[in-house]
Length: 330
Image (cartoon, rainbow, N blue to C red):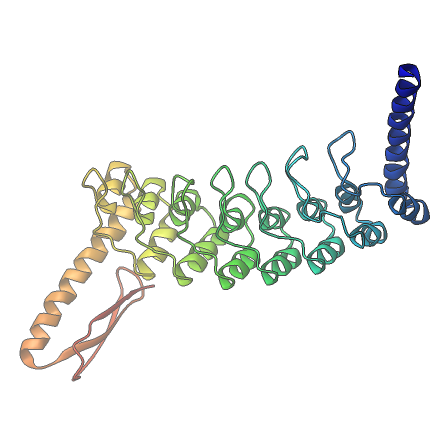
C-alpha cells in the first residue's frame, strides 16, 4: 500500500517536472500551440524556471510579443511578477533593460505598473534613462511613471540623465513631466552642486542651464558644508561655469559652514581668473549701487545696466517711476 502511494507521488512529481520543462521549452522556442495546450491543462503561468525567471520575463528578454499575448490572456498571469526573482525585476523592467520598446508598449497596455522597484530600488524609468531611450522614457512617463524616485544609491532618473548617463533631451523631458531638480534624500549632494563639481565642458553648461531654468535652486547648499554651486566652481576653477551661474543669478555672498564666500574659496585654491572675475564684479556692483543712490537724489533712476564682460559696461539711464536696478553678467 505504502509502496504504491510512494510510486504515485514520484510519478506525479516526475510528470510536473516534465510539464514544467515542456512549458518553458514552448516559451523559449515560441511553440504557441504547445503553450496553449499546457496552459489549458492548468499549468501555472507564473512558475519560475531554474534561474528564478517567469515565462513573461523570458519573453520580455527575447521581445517575443506573440508568446507574451498568449500568456497575458491567461486570467492567472502576474504581469508584475518580481518578488521571488533573482534581481526583483518586473517583466517591464526586463523589457526596458533589453531594449524591447514594442514589448514595453504591450505590457503597459495590459496594465503593467511602471513604479514597481527591483531589489536595488530601481524602476523601469531608471533603466530607460540608463539606456538613453527617449521613446521608452516618454512612454513610461505618459503611463504615470514617477520621476522623483531614488534607487538604493540615491540616483533619480533625472540625476542619471545629468550625471551618469547625460542626455539633454531626456533631462528636458523628465523636467517637463515634473522631475524636481532639487529632489534628493539618499543622495549626499544636491544635483546642481554635483553637476557644478563635475562641470568641464559646454555640454555640461547646457545641463546647468536646463536645471536652473526649470526651477532648480541656483543657491542650493550642501547639507554639511553649506557650499553652493558657486562655491563648487571656485574649487574646480572652471571660469565659464562661474560666469554662467552669475548671469543666472547666483549669490556670490553666500557663506559656507567655514564662513567663506565663493571669492574666499577661489583665493584658497589660487584660481586667479576667478578671483579677478569676482572682485571686478563686486567693484562694478558697488560702483553702480553708489551711482543709483546718486541718481535717486537727483530724481533720476537707472533702469538698465548691461555688462558685456566684467570690464566693458553699457549703461542706459532715463527718468522712470520704477525704482529698479537690473544687472546682467553676460
